Image 1 (tube, helix red, strand yellow):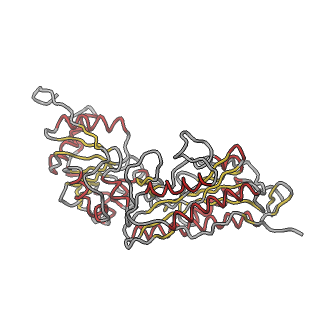
Image 2 (cartoon, rainbow, N blue to C red):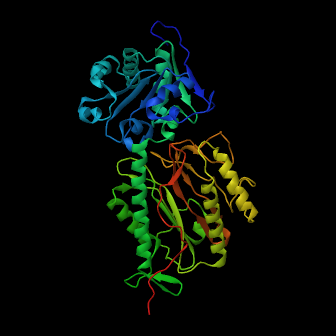
Image 3 (cartoon, one colour):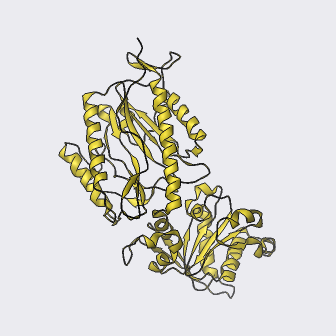
Length: 441
């Protein structure tokens, strides 16, 4: 109910991902949100600040650059982006380069005294912010929030402000599209994370190779069998030493587990010579920065013929598709190329069979940045018309999975499409299946 006793209809709408024209590189730069907003007829966008750590809120983190600044982002079309923040974070806020607005402008204590109900107090606080800053019309909402309380806030707010329409985008939203391509500074940070990630994996390989094969096991320098947990602990120490963090952990899976793409691996499992070992690591800058994502498949000492053939097929698919990349080309083209390649070699694929549990069972890659999976798709299931635009950073990860045969293979690099259209791997690490431990006399 409004204050005058009349009932107001809630105004919410959901935008689909379709646009009136293709996006260009200029459209998706951070400083050019106005064009994206115009495409969707948005008068303003609001990015909710962290409910906890900024690192868990990539949309907000995109604007504040990983700095610890609780607050709220508001951008009206055609005007500078505003950061509403507490004076406690004034120094950090000044480093963002955004237009700053102190949250002390609205006296929260007075609002709480006037509105004892917590929801009504929050609604009134936000109503005053929107009214004072001229936020009206079609307003897009973004950021990581608790769904229930946020829905309650937005539903009541839409009733309180005449002419306010809250807009939610399903996918390919304004912020995701802005984050899709990276500027030079972002790419250099991602290069650095890539180099550090490769150093972590090299430490793991060196650790395994200090052991020695004893029949069906691999023993460490102390004579005890090496386990997946031993390798994981070595990698976690090196990740910390490199100034990285792994909020989502890592994958170190062996044998049948390697045939399940998301099996994290059993730390108690001893390393076995001749078995496939998939190591997939996706660390980021400590404190919530940019991610890297890479995968290598190893066999200790030797590879059985069936595993070697599967590896050769995956590596062949990887080399074929990366050699064919072109700026502006549709992502679906490359997924189809890999499916053609695998099907010609007798492997089933997700394009031909669905659901599918063995063969090539996933998409070729995904966008990468402040999240491990960003909004660039190479899917066989839904073709959204995604293209590889200059500035895009994404993964390339063909794989073959045969848990019934006791193995799986995946190879993954992170790639960058430069402004001039050339492609660069940000994963400078060799692709060799067999690693050879120390040989004892």
